[in-house]
Picture 1 (spheres, chains in turn yellow, brown):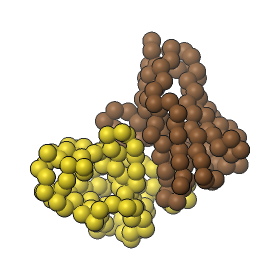
Picture 2: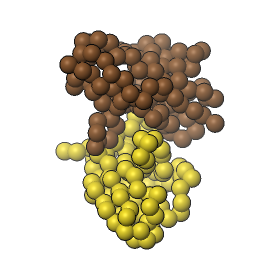
Picture 3: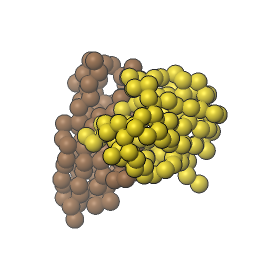
Picture 4: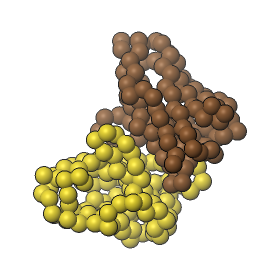
Length: 113
Length: 110
C-alpha cells in the first residue's frame, strides 16, 4: 500500500482552467503539506495542515486553495491556471510537527499550456 | 533571511569511492538537519536526521556530520554504487517546518 498517494500523476491543461490534485495518506499522520518544485528543482512549501486546520500558508496566490476534509486527505484546488503554475506538486505528511520527517507522494506534474 | 546552499549542483564519482556532499546555511541556528534522496520522477525519501547536539550520525553506508560553528553538514556515502545515483537534498528546520536546499545530483560511474 502506498503511504502517501496523489492523483493525477500528470496534468496537462489550458491557461485559465481550474484543476484539482488529490492527496491521501494512510500513515495516520496528523500533519499534511503541499510543496511546489519548480524547473530549477527548488522544493518550496506552500501549505501545511494539522488535523484539518491550516497552520502554514506561505506566500502563494489565492488562486490556490487547499481543502482538508479529514486528517488523511489534503486536496489542492487551483483556479484560473497560469503558465507560471507549471511545476511538480508534491503532497507530504509527517507524524508530528517536532522533527517533521516528511513522507512524500510521487508528485503531480502540472503543465499549463 | 535563511539561506541554504548545496554548493555542488552535480557530482560525479567512481564506483567504490566515498561521495561527500556539502550543505551550508546562513542566518539561522536550526535544531536539526535532514537529508533526503530524490530519484527522477519521484518524491524525496527521508534518509537521516541529525540534531544540533550531535556531531555525527551513521546508517549503513551513510554518514552525516553537523558542525554548528561552521554552519555546515557533510553527507558521506562510502563504497558508492551506481544505485546511489540520485539527487540528495538537505533540509533545515526553519521558520516553516522545513527549508530545503536545491540538491546535489550524484552520479556514480561504474
